[in-house]
Length: 398
Image (cartoon, rainbow, N blue to C red; front, side, top):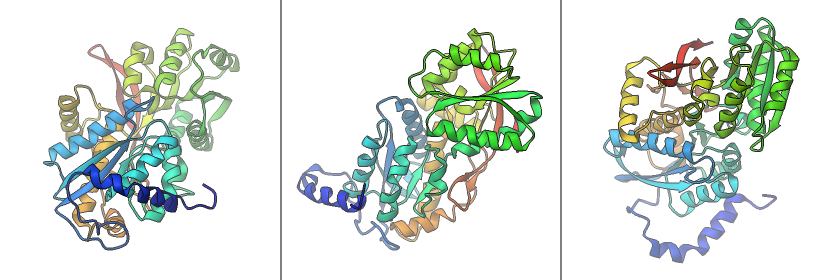
């Protein structure tokens, strides 16, 4: 953004729109003193912004996150922290060009107390300075860029999901133990792909694993994976670690099976490779694929069984990790709003720091010192159950 402050620019634009705002009617009447700073009087209602993609390629993820968040609200009589919630939902779209202004509008025009959601890492990183300077809490419910709770962490930014490097790093030692020969690394060529591979490679090699090759495929453009599958075969690798999601995950797993590698060369990856709609589309082609993730519908706990039943009743489909992240974000806000001394950003941030353990469908987790989710990662293996492919839980990853 150059020398111009992102916050100042946004506030100038917001000021030009005041006349329109006066006519728009933004819903419930809230005490506007709950803006930034350490104070902010509490009102009977609290306005929360939910920023998720409702259009574009990430819409399925956004819909799951929204459904999870709304399920928690429904189960708690539409309240968080004992207060009625005025939920303002905005479309993040496919990236920062739409997500950043949408978030700014939630803060400057809709006057929300906090914003939750965000799928795209570039959007999250593009919003960091705005929320830091605005002193408004931003709860990231998906975006996985390591820097969000790493090099660019902020007192006002919290993550209820995962960091890319952590998901893959959890898998490295297990693969090193299971595979005696070399492992080929393949991923989509963008920031998340690089971070996923780096996290896996670090712990894999530290545990004695050997890399047989490494390749990045053009992100969002690769439909025919045969040249890369040929390279994998020619490398003599004994297994493969892959990071793909969405349509690319479907194509890669299906073509891996068609090329004759499945069953001969074990396929490992982070859970996004076989999650939700991707697994449904892959079907039997995914059987045997092992992944690391912090959730599975097959977790055998009372909390998860209740969640799965409630989500399936409300959404008419099984939950995904994205739905759990949305659900848990609402749970975190519930705890924080109940304990906050006011609606100001600093008061809510202080309360977020005291949330403690969250009893989640994914299992108990908590925020670490960097505001990242400190949680259990599971080794999952795709199996068929009643004719449907599921991510069976093999065990916990250390």
